[in-house]
Image 1 (spheres, one colour):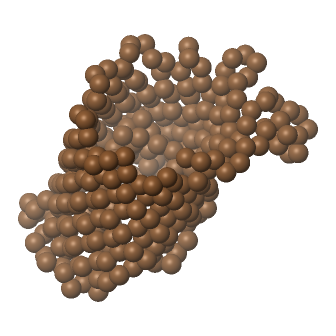
Image 2 (cartoon, helix red, strand yellow; image 1 turned 135 degrees about the horizontal axis):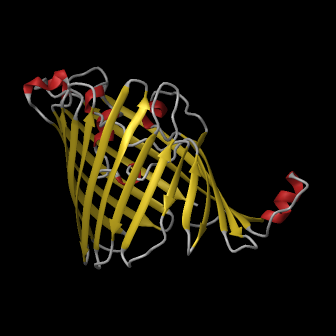
Image 3 (cartoon, one colour; image 1 turned 45 degrees about the vertical axis):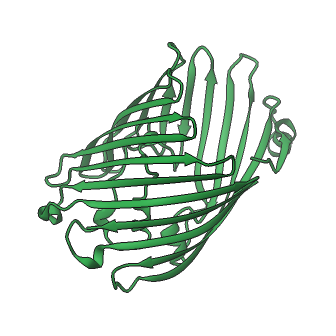
Length: 330
């Protein structure tokens, strides 16, 4: 990623506050995207073409203190990160995520994240197929087809332990009690000790809503051999509320044709415990994606299909979506 600009922190701090801290630098990076999408919703009124676009700026800074600790900050300005809202002409809050991290080789790192932060489990809960369900969520009004929330992470603390054994990583996070909701803890372990293999396991609590508590468990594995990568993931939501359990499983196969071209195929299945799932039909999503990258530009074409998106056999809840988009990184 190319950097827009570098600004000395000492100069910046001098213009903002009287007390200087330490020498470091701030970097500004950005991205923009645009997409055209066609939705075939089995005759539903929201079928048709739609256009969307988004842009993002990320401000990052950091440096080493006199005591050897490293401090880094990150602040994101994001317009259009919620595609549903963007397509509908709405607006999102411009301040997406922000964090402060203090770290050292001996002590590991601790991060305080604001809105947009991820818990230890939430950081790995993207499905193996890359959340294909999100295409259904942005083109239908079927709330049941959206996976439950991951373990709470916004406005919380995350601690990454220093590496004690090569290939192993341990992470713990804590989000304090909110209005009417309990605090949430989360833990994750990762293993990358074998070339090409990545294993992740995370557990946590989704206590972000008053009166609703769920234990969340995510398992994920991927293996890359030459140009081929295969991945599998499974996330289970064990809700204390009756008929609210859910399981989301997914697999994906990708092939790197060249440095510029890649192709992937993935599937996702959502098994839901709501009363609407009494028909025992799982929501199923399948998609194929082709990407071409040249420098900071990536052009992506995608075709996604979904069946039983309200966990019933209604043809109005089957869909077929294709999209072509371009993204630019600066």
